[in-house]
Length: 96
Image (cartoon, rainbow, N blue to C red; front, side, top):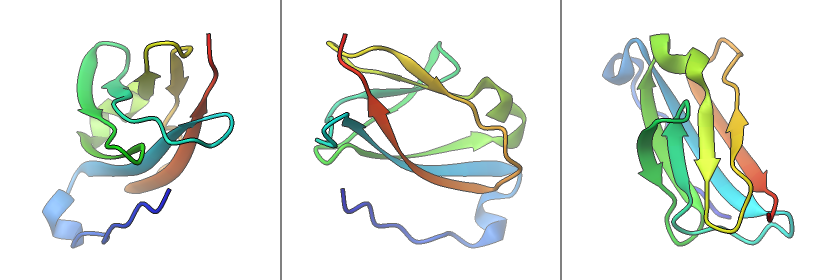
């Protein structure tokens, strides 16, 4: 996937959670234009051509988790339960 990032200065995102991720199918093929939502209602970002995205949310909104949507794939939610300021992960979506 090749997601590259620099962890920002702590003060830049005080009281925020930074999430760097990639979305791919089960064959680990990147999914471009997959939608990343806060909970299931607020669109935060769409993935780029490599399936990568970066979002920043308030710490208080972390309990809503992230929901991933892409036409032809099952909608899936990832809970943000750990006490972290920065998350990095790859999420795999299943075809419908």
